[in-house]
Length: 227
Image (cartoon, rainbow, N blue to C red; front, side, top):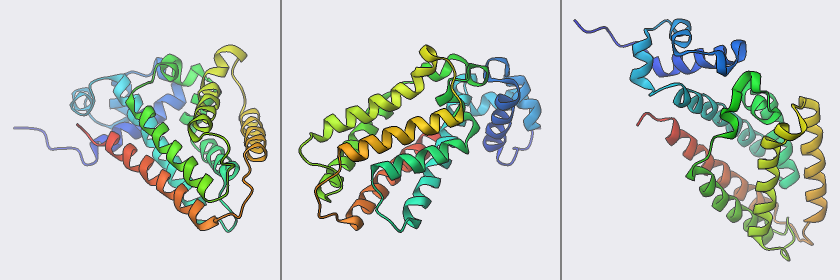
């Protein structure tokens, strides 16, 4: 007689994996440990995921979804103009609330190991296209100067983000305060250097930001769905 299905099995596995990673670090976390913490058999884990790397990718994806939702709420609730510095500020505050994503950006190998520097697939090139479109909309709304090509601005933002992930490998692991200060300084310099001449269409800027967040949220939702 087959075993009954475990309710929310996939969610239980991901929650157990996240707890194990924070407690023991990803390199020392095993599928058996995740299964035990989730209260299911090891074989049940493999019915949901092919292996450890797929579990970790799903855990990080879920953290990214929560971050995106938090930034989305901040944009909707904001009374002032949502410009690029504001977006980065919202983003880093959301990042600080997600232990695993924070470990990624601080280069804490004791938590995530080498996985953080091995991720790379087509989803990031798609996001760059969305970001370029968002930058162009901010230029049309008068928020960003339009005398700099949108794809150049996109590349600059991407280089900064990639640099944040890879900097700990050269500079050593950082702290949450250092990350916050670094992002705040970059956002300030970027905002001052790319400030548009106006007039500013604040509602258009907000619509552009919400469109970008919706696109990212949809992509993350599709990635989380079992294949």
